[in-house]
Image (cartoon, rainbow, N blue to C red; front, side, top):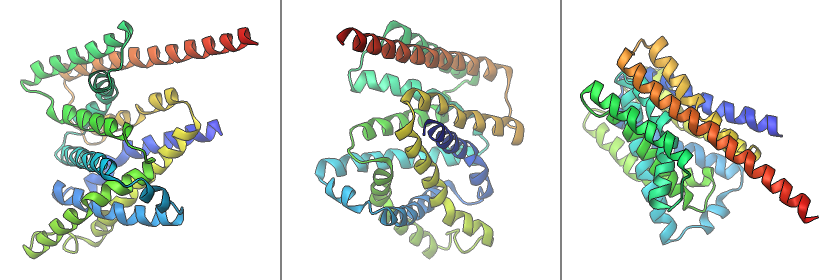
Amino acid sequence: MKNKGIWLGIGAYACWGVLPIFWKAIQDVPAVQIVAHRLAWSLVFLTIVLTLRSGWSGMLSALNRRNLMIYSAAAVLLTLNWLVYIWGVNAGFIVETSLGYFINPLVSVLLGVIFMRERLSPAKWIPVGLAAIGVIYLTISYGSLPWISLALAFTFGLYGLFKKLSPLGSLNGLTLETGVLFVPAVLYLVYLETQGTGAFGHIPFWQNVLLALSGVVTAVPLLLFAGAARSIPLSTVGLLQYIAPTLQFILGVFVYNEPFTLEKLVGYAIIWLALLIFSVGGVYERNRYLVAGRQHAVHSK
């Protein structure tokens, strides 16, 4: 079961890692329209999946004012994340989008300290500080903030924070989130059609198909991830998450020939070092906790 969970996790993050290829294929469609289609078609696909899995009762039972507010906020953050990501990919900033997801784990740690009052050991402050140094260096070398990376890291980090407060699983939660914005998304697409600026039906057939499949490419990695998260340790999931931005980085530099200067290399290297320290420290702390737990169990017998 553990090996199956690892493969499910690899599958999920690999799908997320190669998504730039999908968005690049429909780059002639404005990013806002792509996001609107992604919201609409995701709900259609998720509704089918949820019905086949008889999952409606669990979701409907959790509907109350507090949860609706949480999921509405999560939906807005997720939509902003999708918008920045798709725009960044199609505007030629795949490398910078990958940096956002490299930084994200450290941003999540920082948000946990700020909002959840979690305490960090001095060893965990080191990678957070290094990441900050890397961002400052990139800001100085760019002459401006790497706003795409920071926007992706913070919107997804805040999204994760809201998800931590929510009671539903990933499938039910995403269904509710896309449901919250389904009507505005459809109304926006209808408005574009009345203005003669809508893309769907007015672009090559295969691109129409890809727009419709945006719901599938959104939900499938999520389902793979849900299966992985249930069967392998969280620390393993944490290490696997670097597959996605690594693949994105490779695509940006070696497939789409985005510029990667020495200044960028130095800044990225500082952040990669921070992630290495963070990951190794996390595995060490988990192993120490497990060993201590076993020793306590032995002494208590």
